[in-house]
Image (tube, rainbow, N blue to C red; front, top):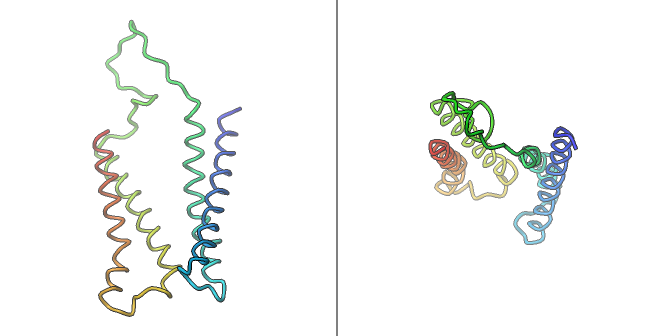
Length: 160
């Protein structure tokens, strides 16, 4: 099966499964009393915002995994020694570390921050934000989450 077809099928499967997982979480959360959804706003948040957002992320990860899973990199030939850096394969570095580290931190931190804000868009009417200290803690949580994930991504990329 061509790589594009495998990637496309894996993307669709990841998208659908993540969306279904979001809807299952909505139903379970409603049954456990985590939120009251009298007008269907939380359901629409899960169905049209959270589900597709995490579905696209899961679809991209699934497509990359499906395409890269079948590729095998042959070991280098002993007599063909070159001092040039690798341009393909697992040891290839497309960008220098000075660009990779901040880029990984910005992308990972931004994604974590947006995911945290997305949760608040759904749950804000039901949070304890009227109590000022708790509200400040809750509304600053996505920023701290983004900073922590950015730091973790930068450290991981520096070790590569």
